[in-house]
Image (cartoon, rainbow, N blue to C red; front, side, top):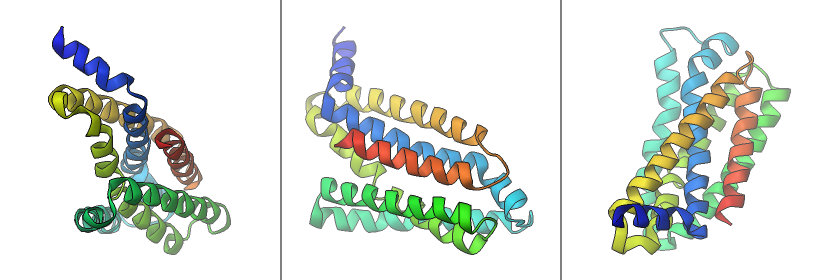
Length: 190
């Protein structure tokens, strides 16, 4: 009963759940990238099977770089300022990606850097959103962390599934999904 009560408390707090849902949406974009990456690169952009791991890995490497940078930047500016700035930039980059998917279709030169930037921006969102969601629950950290993590990951998997199913042979659904997810994430955290 105590654990269930603590988990319930971690799920009904408005500030906390907004950050959980925000994280779920932006992580869903990553899962969507993982779900559609092979098809996007090979079918739409014509990347060879041998080059795919290099191309895919180079964009994903930006997440690692950003996580390292985040650990230093967040100490100076705080999690809220860093993550809110990050989600605003994510929206802007996603809007450019939507534009590029319509007006520069099939041009890897546009897709790769924009995707790498957005994946890098996720390094400033996920951990910070998660820590903000946990701020109120130091006294029940274990229960709060487990229930929040479950909903974040399960929700992100479902969002990623929807993004993967939307693949139509172009980068348009993926780009639009990043813009929708990041805009909704901003609304939830605000």
